[in-house]
Length: 230
Image 1 (cartoon, rainbow, N blue to C red):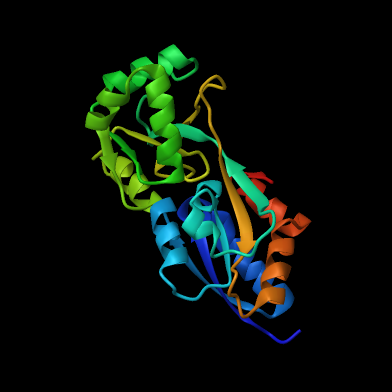
Image 2: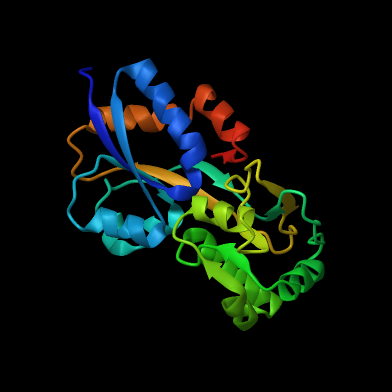
């Protein structure tokens, strides 16, 4: 197979393992890849505005949008990685209690500021969790909306926000301390899935990349970066 240049769109929450896997795949196959990251709304826009791309590794929420789904090849999508939602504080700060749904609720109500990304697959799940806890309105006032995962870390590391609430794998940064995952009763994972673009000019290389995402080498990286494979 001739070396290809793959154009990939991917969810920002999977960036840490994905960058490493892309480099490994390039070394193993000779194919090069250019990745554009985004939140769910941004990825839907990327898929539907007519800009060329070869494959997507995106939150399943993207495929629930009919216009976006139409831009991918028909057939099942391949689940690649998943992560749950958790809480982190600035390194050295006291760790609040989030061990039960009630404890989590009280912790969230006590703080003034929570860094997160409402316009994301995680944000959609958080809205449902807040609703279930009966604090949806209160959390709208406390949430400091960030444009991308890196800004969540920055906001808490520099003291702008008291808590980071996002995917656990994103919160793994030396400047933060992970308090833990949301309690099982309210936990909702974000699942990242892969599919080839309907108009991909590099269909075979794209399929090979998706196969590689399920390989033992890729799974090692996914686990090391705080996510679960599949």
